[in-house]
Structure formats: C-alpha cells, structure tokens
Length: 308
Image (cartoon, rainbow, N blue to C red):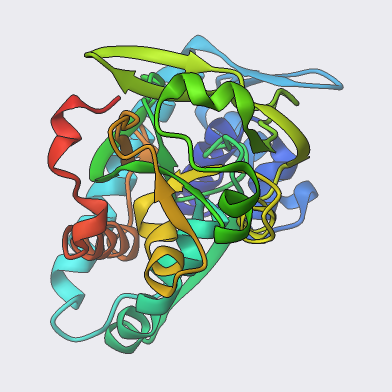
C-alpha cells in the first residue's frame, strides 16, 4: 500500500463528505477510493470512517488522523515546491467558482496573462450566482460577494464595489426620472430572482439609515445577463455593480438615476477551506486574482470600510 497516496485519498474523502465525490475530485474509480481507505484502516488497526448506505461520518480516531494528514501533506507539498520551483513551473488544475458576470467582465479578459505566466496550470471556472459548497463540489476557491459567516472558510477580501441604479433613455422618456425614493412607487423595476425563489428587494442609504423597498415589476429573471438585457430593453429600472454598468452608461445605453441615494457597497472575497492545505498553484492563483482586483479602481470603492 502506498501510504502517502492513502493519506491523500482519505483526506479528500473527509473533505468531500463522500467516497463518490472524492473519487471525482481525484479522477479515480469509486471502488479504488473505497479499497484504499479500507487498506489504510487495516494497516492502522483502527476504523477511520463510519459508513452507511447513504452517508459517512468520521470517527474520533479518524479526526485525529485527518488533522495529522493535513499537516504532513502540507509539509510535503511545501518541501517539494521549495526544492523544485526554481527548476519547474507550477502545474495542475485550479477549480474556482464565481458569478458569471464578474468572470466575463473582470477575470476572463485578464486570464490570458495568467496562463502565459503559468502555462502548466489549467483553470476550470464554475460560473454561478448561487452559494456553492467548496468542499462538496471539489473547488479550490470561490469568489463571493457579501458577508461571510462560515467559520470553516478563510475569507480574503479582494475588492469592494458600489451599487448604482439605472434605466434606459426609452424607459425614462416613458415614465420620467425618479428623483426621490418615494418616486419609486410610480416606477417599474426588472425583478431579480434569488436562489430562494424570492425577488430581491432594493436597499438604499437615506439620511444615514437603510431603506428597503419592494419594487413593482412585470418581468423577473434569475440571470445577470438577462437582467441587464431587460434594463437595456426599457422593461424597468435596474440595480447593479458600478463596474458592470459603467460601460453602458458611458455609451448612453443606460442613464444613472437616484445618485443622491447610494446603496451599501458590496465586499468581494475569495474563499478557501480553512482546514485544507493549498497547493502552490492555488496560492499563486489567489494572489494573482487579489492583485488583479487591486488594480481595478471600480472594484476598490472608497467606502469599502462601511460595506457589509
């Protein structure tokens, strides 16, 4: 039995919460993963994982062994990286999830430069607005907008952006321009459907307090591109990040309204599992992404300290 491989397989099973997900992440047959863990348990003379037909749970011995596996695997990876990084380039796959609109407007245009610097790294993007489980979905890191309360994750703040309200010239010609929050009673918005199937309310800062407004809408969508398309088509007012809407404003396709009533800025963080060692390729990607965001003024709002 290759004990080092067995430690890697066991650690991934614990992190993934299932043999099948661990097998997918390791590109191994599920039967091989199961046999490897069984052989490791036989070698150690201790049960590491309790198995049922539907789930697994780690034993007390398994928790102790897992913690030591993480330290050993991390030390080996660091040792190999330190010895070889002057001779070889980092290689392997980095799996990252982030909102599709952010990927299209920010990450993807800059990605050729990263891949040119690290030609042996492959980047796999999972583009979604939903809250994903890093471990269950076999991801290395996740870019997320908003507050982070999960203590199992490390959150590195990489940016902050402002929310603005816009409408097309055609919409404003038909309905007029709102100048106060009370004017919104007479207006339509494009609804944005959240993961819980509820339409998102709008938030503004008025006289130092948060004011939440449930906007009226005739059209609601659950995709950012479609949301902007509806706004451009004159179907209602829309709210979005300044970095994504600024190009439409500059071209005249949209006009910003209600400038006197800002929304709270939104924090952008890159997250990764707190109890998992990050390979050099992942650390390089995280550092590169943080530097990319730091170079973009639209993603470094001055009011970031007030954000949530």
